[in-house]
Image (cartoon, rainbow, N blue to C red; front, side, top):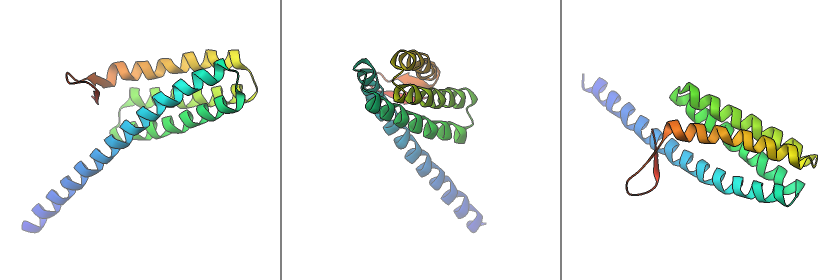
Length: 134
């Protein structure tokens, strides 16, 4: 009986530790995504194809990780937002690489709607500042 209890408690502690690690990684991805999106906007405005494509590829990769995060939590709408964002940033990267700046900017605007949609549903502003994931 003690062995079963010990295994159960160990599994619970491990699950909490992994969840905290996932949440910390998620926070880092979101912070990186915000900074990278700002850089992407500037690089598209400056018509810097190489830098804009690099930013968009980085965002595509970040949102593939975000998609995996939400898959583990089995949250269908968040998975869809993240997958749509990842795919959209892939298109932005391709358009930027081809110096199709108007198309890249239009796709970026549409893709960014996924970010806002997920934030609206799955992010809560804290009274002391900052946000938490719902």
